[in-house]
Length: 392
Image 1 (tube, rainbow, N blue to C red):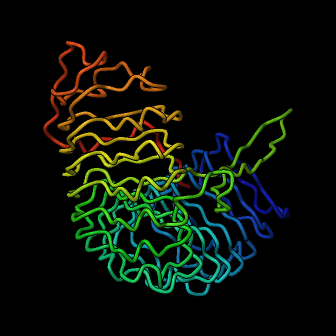
Image 2 (image 1 turned 30 degrees about the vertical axis):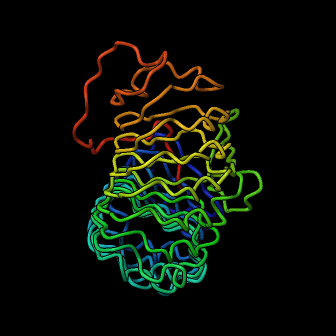
């Protein structure tokens, strides 16, 4: 692209095969160049040349180098997406003057260092997406006065320390917390249960320990259905090309309520209180050290689609109430100490794959065939739930 200027309030060249460097077009208020093969650095003078920008999307390209300091001159910027590139260096500290930012997505780059202390406290910011980088800092005191933030996504970095302190005070609007694939330690603070809008909690693959807080069963956000939750859905951009013209649709999609505590060191029992979350859509407690029975009222989770309780030390029968769960599309109870009869009611009658129950020698029923399956003795880091989430 060799245009020297373009006077248009909105430019959308997303999902093409454009190559070369980022163009600098003055007078443009929105620039969408996602999903191309643009390369080179983000221009160091982008702030001077494109100071009128409100929306900037350069995601899914081949950009490298650091985030230019001149961006702090784009005072009206409300949406910034630089995800899925090869950006390096530390996150700049210039955000304080960008008071209109609502969404920052720097995920899937090679950024390192910490998070600027005032980054999440921007008054309009409600989504901060920093997952899949090499960021590293002590999370316990990393987030202060982040009163507007609704989505905090920090998965697959190198964050350490305990979970953020006084989380209810500092992140009162939080609805989605994603910390999977880090090095956070200690236990889940009970203060977390004071977040009234929380409906997606992903702590998979950390070093958390202790008991699962009973108070999670009191979190209001986990009790609401997709249709009636009133939560902020994520936005999916859809670009359709009709007769050579790009038409952009914004598809608002709700996110099912989710608790994923898998691949940690939690011990004790599964709190019976969790069975009061009747609209919970996904529950993954696998690869922990949980003991005792599966809660008798597990079948109360009528909207649960994909429970995974595998690789623990749970014992006793599969609760009869689970036979009334009609939304099940996936189930994994393998490698526990369960006993008794395998259920056959409703969806259970279709779960004939022996891998669902393998590693429970005292279970009996049709699915306990003579098929021999390998015993997994280690927790594979690549382990994922059968149902993948979309968090952005």
